[in-house]
Image (cartoon, rainbow, N blue to C red; front, side, top):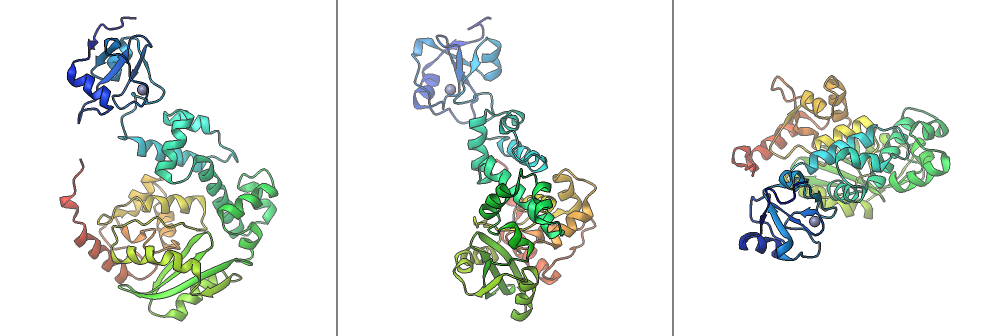
Length: 363
Ligand SMILES: [Zn+2]
């Protein structure tokens, strides 16, 4: 150990950054405390050390080389925010791919380079759900997929990774908004509120269960829009102008008017694990940009699944909210659109005009 070999005492500027817990713009320096053997980022919330015990290093590597250990609170080895999103996205994919009912969150955290508590916090900030809650929605989606494919409730329960029907039932009620049997029976016992309004893109149907948005569709004909909703949930109780639909309507209308905005609407979507991965990936495409079907396939780690990606886009239950219109063909063609190619063209033109990508900054 050669503590202090490349360290220097804190000069006034560095000391001020430590005292203020505010690093100078662009600086990556860390400070080590000789009495504890720990080094921190300047923003660390830990108790302020004595100035004479502080040594300044140009970066975490230098502090480590000098024999200091990283602080558990401020985690100075992690680039502040730089690759957090990517690491969480990878953890999320692992979580989706695991067949276990209760994925080992400590392992996921370690694989992503976080302590369990830090992982929990960052995951929740990025995804909007805790890792456990997210795992529950993944299992619930599997359950739905199996039920949609015609499996019995019991088979679907085990296929989805549940230990038993009681657990599945509890989870499904929380995450699906429907019990497995109700979903199996085409939404029997579930109330779906819907509203149809005018929009720049024609008549717009918005439907929601008490758990969240379950359908957004566009068309010319109210009767056809309703018929499609009924076909999807043949046994649900459909209620026109219900409260659940009105609760999410403003967010959807805002999205239809200004496609770049991303309102946080609770979603209640049925889908296979694959479909949900595609839909999640589509939600990461910024307004004003497009991706090809094959790029989306590559992004979800299944580069040969271009056709399945196109099918998942076509099966998107919530227009605009999951922006499947931002996916186009490799040859420059528009590709299909469940709600008509003219609407797809119009959406892409509007987004390109309101959000020119050549003026965006990457800083
Ligand atoms: Zn610290």
